[in-house]
Image (cartoon, rainbow, N blue to C red; front, side):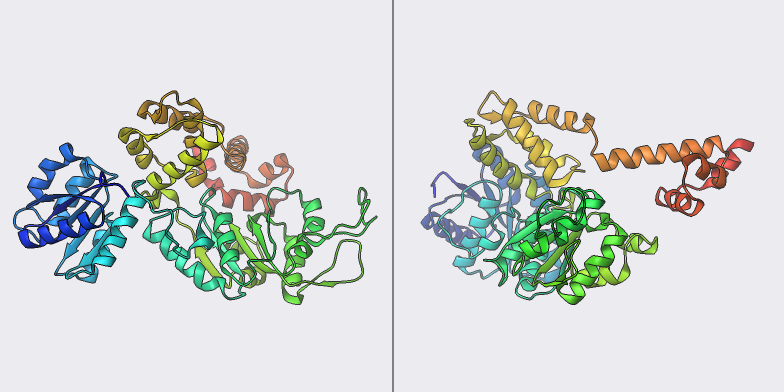
Length: 453
């Protein structure tokens, strides 16, 4: 811990200000006292503190108004608010608006110092690497977001049971990391964790990949293959993008989950298996079920406990934390001597849209690490990387969806909204064609009207 870690303390009670200063100084920090919010704002540019602790009720500008001013000028600076008038609605409102935490007076010194350390660690400042938090199970999930903490606390509770868990979240939000954390926190931690992306394996290979096959079961099956269920026996099998699994396989998966045994392709015998299944998708499975693409009975078998991962845009307080974490990791990988992001560069990252979530942030940080020629990552470099990412190739699924929609629009324009004719041109049956139109929310009658105007 360094005495250079400056903490701005704001309170209009001189006695409390002195007491707080002594406690922080004793803990090895450098306190900067201010007797009002206005005085604090004047001191901020010159002192450049790494944390602000402010009283809520003060004459003149109060603590929340001070926080709003700090958030506008220094969006990455963490703020802890103290109050003798603590109430749950105030605390909830404050933390929703981005206050790091809200403590009631009289406060316990140990709790205050713990929160100070957490706030500094979360903003990429001081961090005690020797502290054992008992959080090894979630060590790879970097967050200070209340939304993520809520998901993690529920994940920790369900980990000790054997219930199947269903994780929903956009692509790139970290579904596999959460699945691994649940596995590590549970009684199967010392057994295998095996992951498979159901959308990345061709339909004809997925069955033997999951359930195994016997030698000679099909062309190319030159030896017995155990399959992932048996490989994960005693442990956890993570089925990512379960929404992409073909209906024919969904029936077989349901049977395995019900009977707790697998029958390899080409075998007459079933083999007992003990596997916890965690599944995930970015798709809306309720829509998929309504449209007949996902079995309802399988959904309820998989979805004993559901967890929703928030997109990165809803946990922006994690962006500095994740960006600094990736920077350290990637600087080591590429053997670069980097000390951090310029303040403007970090602000640019915090305000980016992040449609690709944490995976996109990792890609951006990797790009700037490779291209940086100075120890500090500049705003210009970050801006260029963000622009190139936006202009780059879309994800395969997005490109396919866009092509499909444009193709359907063109068919409807050519046939003037005649669905039977359009389906014939597309070489699809009418029912299937209607499903495609529904998926893209295309109304054929619009194209009929369009031709008559």
